[in-house]
Amino acid sequence: MAQKPSIPKGTRDFSPAVLAKRNYIFDTIKKQFGLFGFQPIETPSFENAETLLGKYGDEGDRLIFKILNSGDFISKVDDVTYSSKNSTSLAPKISEKALRYDLTVPFARYVVMHQNELDFPFKRYQIQPVWRADRPQKGRFREFYQCDADIVGANSLLQEAELIQLYDAVFTDLGLTGTTIKVNNRKILSGIAEVIGAKRLLVDFTVALDKLDKIGEAKVKEEMLLKGIPERAIAKASPLFSMSGTAEAQLLQLKTLLGESEIGLQGIAELQEIISTVHELGLKWAKLELDVTLARGLNYYTGAIFEVAAPQGVNMGSIGGGGRYDDLTGIFGLKDISGVGISFGLDRIYLVLEELDLFPESIAQSLQVLCLNFGEKEGLAALKLVSKLREKGVKTDLYPSATKVQKQFKYADKRNVPYVILLGAKELENGTFILKDMISGEQTVHKLEETPKVFFK
Image 1 (cartoon, rainbow, N blue to C red):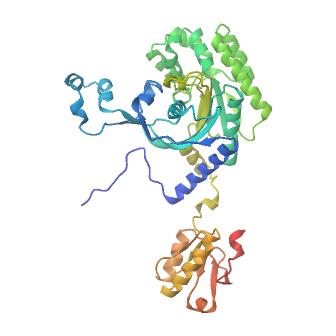
Image 2: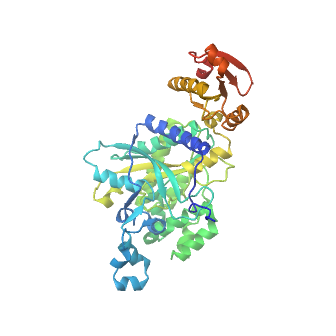
Image 3: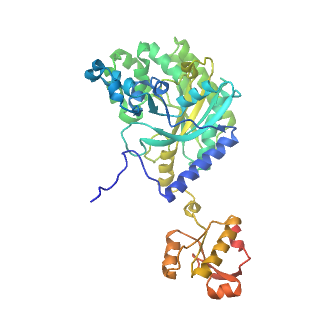
């Protein structure tokens, strides 16, 4: 007996109904990307390992799927390395490529390779799958799509404000009216690490701080201690864990805390400008909120950082995030190219829309009309009618065999088809067809050359 097939954990098959909903989200996001002047690009699903490794911090590197070299790769490993059983030294010798972890680093590589072909500032969007060797859970998969929008080649803070507007426009289009766009600045975090005496442990500090909403204050402090951050330094940072109030009030508190940190004060000034600009422009439905514990644990962020929280009451992690990365292309040899970008979490957005029942009912309608099949002669005439309706833009199909009419109607019900066409021997003789409304049960007679107006409401 053949073993039942399966798929790897953290991956999924998508049914037609699910894919229709996913495409609805894609189309909504793409529409807004176009309205905001972004252009599409695509990059390979896998990159040279050296392109990806070292760009996301230690935690990110551990989650990168590595691809084994083709052929007898083990024979090319020297005995000392092989016998050491050290994965860090062995991996580069047996794996030279890896599946992309996100779309931002490959985009930076793209910009460097194609810099002479691009017009700066370059506004790009990219919608493709990425892979992470993470522990699968609700809303977190090992294979998932990212929808990114980035602007490179200009350092104006108006771009941050524009990306906040883009978030607002997309989520308003999707009906997610209770979203919160959280904002912070990595320079503020650098300033905090500086004034508490943990400057050299900035990465460990921010990685732990970024987990505050997931594991709580006590666990964050515990992790900081384990990473070597002194207890007195953690005590100095304690005001961060309970900071609240309006953005303006929190920025005033930060000015006091970071009064002796030049980089920290610079981050505060940038945030003030971004928040002020957004308030001047206004948002449709989203709420902008300063979160001083937001860290976005990726090493390449250097300025403003963003994270979008799902509407209140929905148990879901962030559904979007991003930030400024002033020196990302520098790691590939191209200096002084500033960039800022955001990403939409498609899979989590899908789950939120599903939970809140926000998908339009029309999405489930993959077929508008089904022609029943009454025999070879009638079927051929029906197929001609099907072709004509398709030319008019009506989603139409013909049941493939002349089986029992009851079975064909049952198929139409399962496909959620609103209209069924009956073209039997009598109708064929009269040059007509019967159109049945599957909801009301009403039947109307039409000429074969006629396209009912009901399809163009």
